[in-house]
Every structure is written in C-alpha cells, then in structure tokens.
Length: 174
Image (cartoon, rainbow, N blue to C red):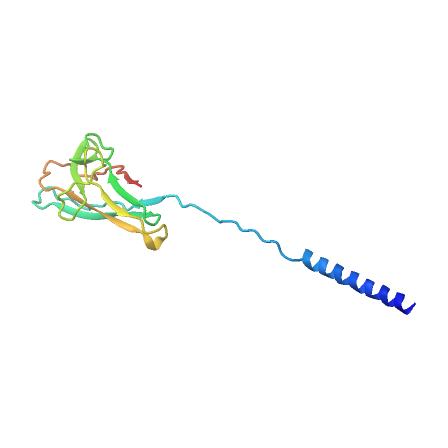
C-alpha cells in the first residue's frame, strides 16, 4: 500500500509539474513587429506689412524710397518663390505701378533690391521674383523677403490728397 500511495503521490506531483509547465509556457509572450510612418507635405505661410511712403513732395528732385517685408514660413527644405502682382489700380503694370486719388494717378514701383534696379514681378514673362528655401513653420524660422519701394521724383502735376493702391498681392509658390 505504501508503494501504491507513493506511486499516487509521485503521479500527482508529476501531473502538477506538467500543469505548471503548461501554464508557464502558455504565459510566454508572443511578439510581432510593425512599422510606423508619417509624411510631411510642403506648406508655406505668408504675411506682408503695408508699405507707407509718407508725404511725397512733387517739387522735389529726389525719389522717395521706403522698404517693407513679406514674411514667409515654409516646411523645412521646401524651395519657394515670392512674386508680387502689379496691383489693381487701373492702368498699373509691372513696369509702372500706380496709386490713385480720385481720378489722379501717382506712379511708383516695387523692387527686389536696395539699388532699385530690378522690378519685383509676378513670375510671368521672366519677371523677377525672390526665392528661398524653407527653414520650418515655427515663428523662429520666419524668412523676410525685402520689398523696396520708390516713388520717382518729378511728378509735379499731382493733386493734393492721399494716394493709395488698394491691393498688391504677394504670392508664394512652392
């Protein structure tokens, strides 16, 4: 009987070990791998400051020059170009932009350089634009594109009043 009892105890112990081994192997982790992916599309943000010439003296022999900026933020490494249209004043062209005061017109232009030798264009017909490469979309990555304005001297037949160009559109192509 002792042998039978011993055999039963050993059998139960063996079964318990097998159950523990089975439970232990069932709790072993299974693994899988996967990839994580995202894409970043090119994007640009643009803003512009007004160009205020101030008071123009029609009797002066000196051009009136002022500057402003177009601010551009583009995703990093995105090439971009800034172009300016001729404005919306009747008769305005890229070669000669115009402001109006009632029926009177004042000529002016916008340039890409401080020497005011290259007219800022709209990218049509080979007109000049200014390019750059994006540094990122954060405020700290803002890139300023200078716009140099000039009202030429010698416009002696202007009426008194305020002359304005309602809209110059800055277009960023990327």
